[in-house]
Amino acid sequence: MQFIGALLVSLAVVTAAVEIDRTKARPIEEFDHYWAHLPTELQALHDSRPSGRITNGREAIPGQFPYHGVLNMEFDLGIGVCGSSILSRNYILTAAHCVDGAHGGWVIVGAHDRLIAEPTQQTISFEVEGVSIHPGYTLDRIRNDIATVRLTSSMEFNDRVQPIRLPSRTDGRTFSGMLGTISGHGRTSDASPDLSPVLRYAINPILTNANCLEQWGNAVQYIEPQNICLSGYAGRSACNSDSGGPLTVQDNEESLQVGVLSFGPLAGCESGIPTVYARVTYYLDWILANSDIEDAAVLKLTIEKDN
Image 1: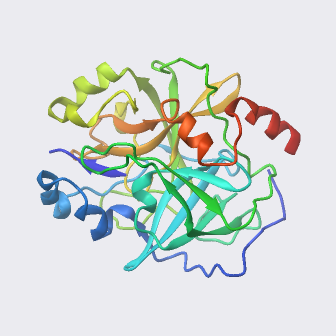
Image 2: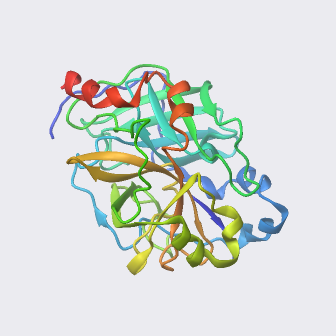
Image 3: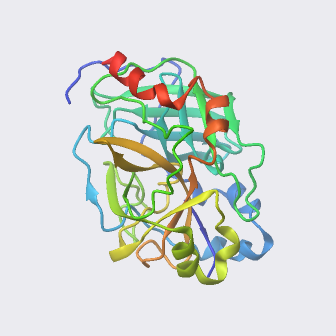
């Protein structure tokens, strides 16, 4: 995540070309190419950025978030890790800043502990040609921070691997006041450089943009209608390496993705200041045009058919 301003299955599908050293993944925020694209006034934050995690949250129950993917990106200086969500057998959704500049990589789905080759996991590679970054993406004011990734082979859907449901074109809700859930493998403590081996999550209310702007104060230029905000109440928050992960709400007893994690406050993950996401309903047409999903309204039918 960017920091700105002061179910038991035995099948595992692994592409042979993917060679994984699970211990060397680093938060995307540690790579110099990420900072080089930020506005000049934010360059000074390079050496003062906070570390963090899914703060004051909980460890997920294995299989609790079958739509979550651990996205690993290959850069010149190493492997970065972000969150993602499953759109279909062939596509995942993430933040643009996670895959911008990547040479390729892989996603692990069906994972609880990302450091263990669990029998529930499927590890599938992607190439740079499969990455679609929103054409309006820029780190100047952090606009249009959203991307889709086409995988080199298809996932197998099962109890631990399922696509996320997206809002329909006719869904005009802002989702403010609803409880939002963010999941991820971000850092395990503010003092440790280590990422969480296991999937964690936090739940807080989704805010109106007006309330979010009020809490962000002088950084209001970074929050616009295409964003959606999750409260940081009680220090429950996403943080470094949770970037690109899905913000979901419960809708008719199903998880519905309403945001893609983009950035958070310099004050820290436990500061209580909201985290900010790309709003899925704003980008829905772009997501559909850059994946193999024909219509978000049929996602529920797709899931039922695959089961």
